[in-house]
Length: 199
Image (cartoon, one colour):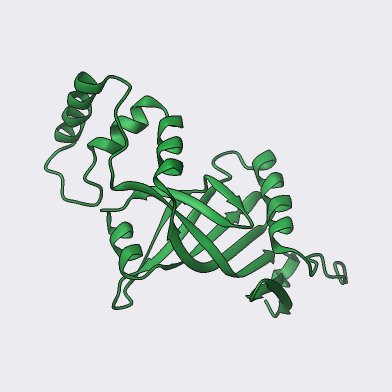
């Protein structure tokens, strides 16, 4: 049988993530940094949506959002979450679970300023996750902000970033006939242990 040897090594999960992410950026046709973000309310009701990874490393995995949105409210009420990267063309996925912490205002300001002007205007104009009577209302708000601020619209105080600090990471590799390979890494203190899992 092919693929008898383990292809997902024990070691540093951040280095393995970096290697797989680099391959995904080179091969995925769209948004290799897209990840599913799962959060839950204080009473345990889960929800999931796609967001974009904007920074990563041993400190964690950073995304940005409106903290007054549904996911923002869930993060405030229950600051734990899970991420899922799925790269179909590579036959790989990575699951990451951990606690969430808010990034500092300087970091949020710097990322907000780096975005396309229309993206900044769209974020500032949006009451994300709240009912909207018509798309025209939203677009009118965008144009009103453009008229008042041009391309210099400031970051709204409720638009911020969150960093997921991993406690558990799982790497999954597709194999023929669904004889897949999985390795789970768990952090205990500052060290990582790992174990293969049955698929």
